[in-house]
Amino acid sequence: MQLVTRLFLRLLAVGTVMMVIAVVVTIISARNDIDHEAAASEKVGELLSILADFQTEVSLSEQVLKIDALNQSETLRHFHIALLDASGKRLTQSPKETDISTPDWIKNLLVRDVQLATTSLPIIRSNGERITVMLEPNPYSESTEAISSALLFLGLFAALGVALIVAIWVSVKLAFKPLADILAGITRIESGDYKLQLASSSTQELNQIAQALNHLAAVLTEQIAKQRELLHRLQDVQEEERRKLAHELHDEFGQLLTALQVDASYVLKQSAHQPELLACAQAMYDNSSSILSQLKNLLAQLRPYGLQGDEEHDIALEQALRDLVRQRQSRGDAALTCNLTVNLKSAVVPQRLAVAVYRIAQEALTNVMRHAQAKQVDIQVSVDTDSNQLCLRVADDGVGLSEPSTTESQTQKQNQALRGLGLVGMRERILANQGTLQFITTQPHGLIVEAIFPLVLDTASSHTETQHD
Image (cartoon, rainbow, N blue to C red; front, side, top):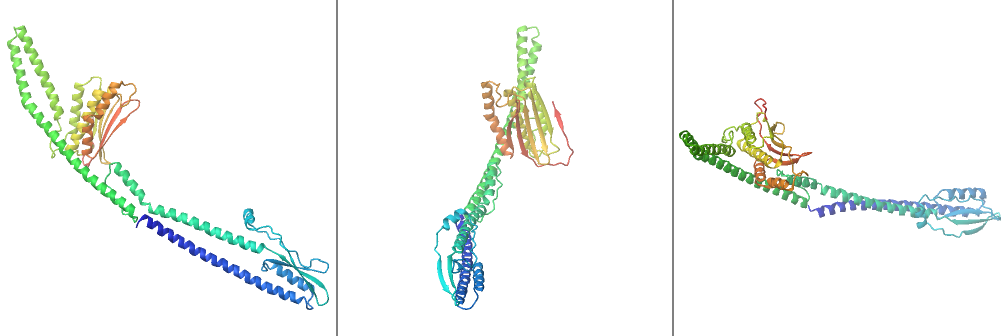
């Protein structure tokens, strides 16, 4: 059902109920007025009977009491009866002033202070006594009725208005109640959670929005799955190319450099008495040794020891990270202290995830050594058995992202590093393994790179923890 139709039907129902209530109240009020008028008519007849008795032998005092009772009955409407003797003395009680308990502004609007003339009727009794019957106007009963009716209809109108406002508020609240779920679904989509299935709504427009969001979430889920699969294939190809390149370098250049070292060593022995030739042979030997050492480091970067298994074998992530730290410390600044803590809690880390963790740690450590100007870097790899997550945390005490003391060139270099291919590679591996990546600036200075991945755990083995400085 459309939202406009739903609101119209609910307002129509409320209006109908209020109309029925107004008709019932009006009928009851009209019946009360008719009853009052009928009672007043009876009192007028009684008054005529009393006036007729003035011509008989009925005592005057008895007639006075009847008229006072008639005046005090509150059913004789619109006038008050007074009896005066021949001298003008009032024989009946004076009328009591009726206080209309209504606000002054309503009195001023509905009741006017109008001077009403009295009507006198002289009567001569059978004994010759002369009396006067005087009819004094009494507008208070009619004013009371008018004010009561006005207040009644004002109350009905106010109640109808309040009821319509409440009905509109409740109808809109109920009609838009599914919006909370829709907004929550949009928030989940914005955060990257596409496992969304909004329930159907009875409101047509909101139901269309919910179905559109469900379809969008399904399409995004499918596309993300395809993207992850593509990234997995791309990274598998990259690792395979690294492996092939490492083998080629090892088999070809490694053998050639080894042969060159052997030849240089032979020349050294044969040129012991020829200084010029000896210096040249020594340079050849030293250069080949340096190239061979660099080749070993390059091979370790391309295909680290411990990450050379396949999908069917466990990956020695801890050993690979240990070799990475040792290698970077031997090549980098000796003043940089690098600490490694691994706490896998017997979790089985798949090869793809192990390679992703290693490559992210490798890139983060490279950025620290090149741009951070840090004195210490801490690498932590831990597993949370409660949330089934693996966390990689690389923290340094360097210049951070926005350290005021850094020069403009240093800041530009660091920002370029974060925007460069290294960060792109990190994010690709994060996306491929359904993880999250964030950069946290610490005080007073420093930067934390934190990557968190979902992990299926196997806690059958005992807890192990290692630390390397």
